[in-house]
Amino acid sequence: METLQKVCLVFTIIGAIVWGLIGLFDFNLVASIFGEGSIIARIIYTIVGITGLINIGILFNHIED
Image (cartoon, rainbow, N blue to C red; front, side, top):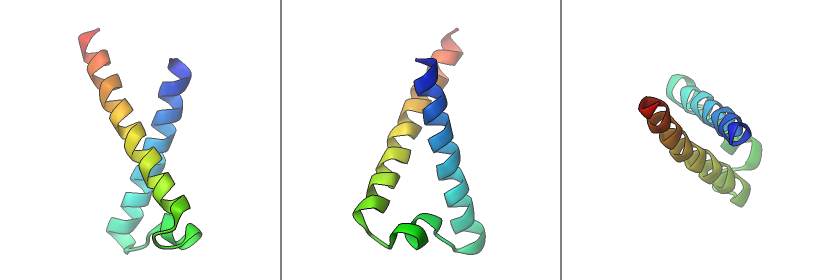
């Protein structure tokens, strides 16, 4: 489980960096690499979203300990 948590954390950090670039510079790194609305970009956004949800579960597990 620890490996899954680390992988999810890496994807969440990558997602945060992408959102930071969008917010600060109006630059979408994923869209510029893979194309706006491409299937690969949608997969990446989906993976980042799922890992964010997994991290929410990790947060609540940590609070209970």
